[in-house]
Image 1: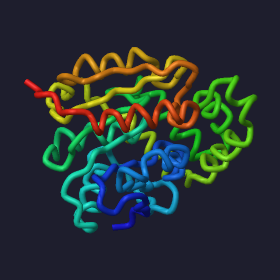
Image 2 (image 1 turned 90 degrees about the vertical axis):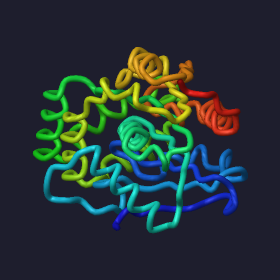
Image 3 (image 1 turned 45 degrees about the horizontal axis):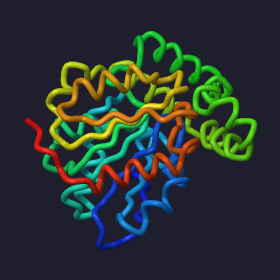
Length: 258
C-alpha cells in the first residue's frame, strides 16, 4: 500500500478518517486538526495520484480509491472509522458507506456531489492538464475554492493552496478527473445507512447547495447544513464552524435509519 498518511490526536479516541480532495493533500485538513485532535484519532491521507502517493499509469475509479482506503485501514488494524470527505473525497466516502458499511461508523459529506456535472467537462480538463500541467487550470480552480472576500483577506492561505494544487502530479490530477467523469451515485444514495451529515457552502460554484440538498434528500435520515460565506473549500474558509459541525455530528446520539 502506498497511501501516505498521518495519525494525530488521541490514540484512544474514535478514528476520524480524512482523505485529500482533488488537487490537495492531507494538508487540506490542517485548519481543522486542532479542533479534532483532543477527541479523535485523526487519520489523514493522500488519495491516489496526490501528494506523496503513487500515480498509476492507467485509468482508475472511485471504487479503486475506496478499496485503497480499505487496504490502508486493514494494514493499520482499524476496524471502523467515521469518514469525512470533501469534494472528490466525499465520493470515496459514499462508495465506502454502500460497499463497506461495516467499516463506516458515521459519514460527513462536504461540498461534494453524487454527480459532478457532465463527463465531458472533466474529460476536457484532464486533457488540458495533460497538455499544460496543473498550472494551466490553477487560477480557475482557485476562484472556485475561495470567495473573493477570503482571497483578499487571507492571501497567504490561498497562496499555500495554490502551491498544493500546482504540485499535484499532472497524471494524478488528470486521472482523478477521469474518475470523476465516470462517477454517478444518484441511484445508490438510498443504500447509505451510516448516520450522515451533509455540509454545503452557499457560495460554492463547484458543488452548489442544490447538490448538497440532493444528497440529503436521497440519504435516509441525513442532516443538511449550508454554511454561509464559504466557497468550495468550506472547511478552510469557515474552519471553526465546519469543525464544530463535524464534532457535533460524530458525538450526537445515533438516530435509527429505517
